[in-house]
Image 1: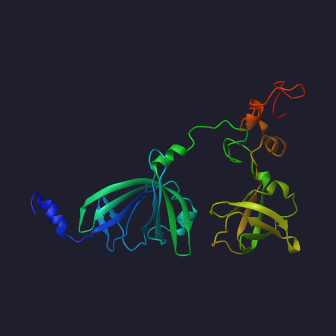
Image 2: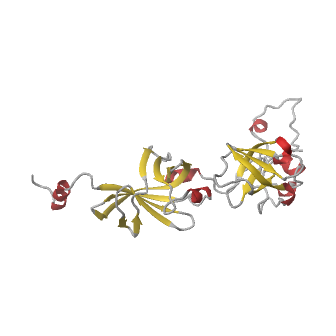
Length: 290
């Protein structure tokens, strides 16, 4: 064979199985983690990529143009790498990921093949599956504010300014079941404002309330949208916070907070903008929301 460089001949003589995949994960708080599907740790690009973490590449999907591509990665949950508590606390939400192909015999020979962001994280009993969203997916993110009828603030935050003290009830957990929590000691109160509210226990992320009902002995049964934390136990103190559907009517009538409403309820919708003028129609320019 002629016309081949020495480097190419050398590459032909090497086994075809010397390539490995590696991922460098950078969280929004600045912490950096490295993982590889090779069976030994690899060090290159200023990072040590840990082996035996269960990280393997999953299904990938790409498209031409600016369509956002996605791929998946699977990994194990461990205190040394990515723990279930860290995921529940949201520490890996929005983390950036660099995907490398590397020759594990010569780690200095590596190639950055993809840059992505953490998307949906699905937890299992022993591991997790992470959706990696390509850079084009950032074009779908909201920049600035949207003009829409409903409020875009969170109830009780600095923009909303509602004092959550009168809208919070505290009680003790009696039991934790499949998708529900039984609470006691909250006293008597109107359940209406607390439907679709939030349930908080310790420093765990809040769970969204799906429904409320009174159980045996006056205990309160709270059905949750998300699964209860496995760390919740009987005797833990829980806080039940009222909900808000972000409508102007609820803001004004329930919380008396119309002055701080962060939506645009008086903007006509497409039904009004495209409506045909009629003699009995309402086209006098008055407010959509009285």
